[in-house]
Image (cartoon, rainbow, N blue to C red; front, side):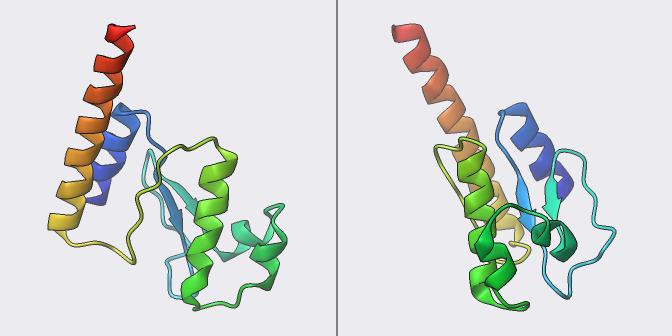
Length: 108
């Protein structure tokens, strides 16, 4: 399901960012997904990334910082691997946002 989500994000020009933690697989890789494991997080230019402890809920803030740095205007987040209903809802929202952007673009 994460593979489908990554493909949909890519199709809708949306960043798909995953912030790993201690239990995350080191070799996590999905095409269309920007995965930041602990080592990659430590290399970021955010002081916060050096300060936040492992296995801590606030680690997801690193993802917010990355998204903002990439110019993201809308952030949708979920904890851990969401169930299929949550992923489906996010995909529906992506499609609607894309359709609205296209509609607004055509209205100008």
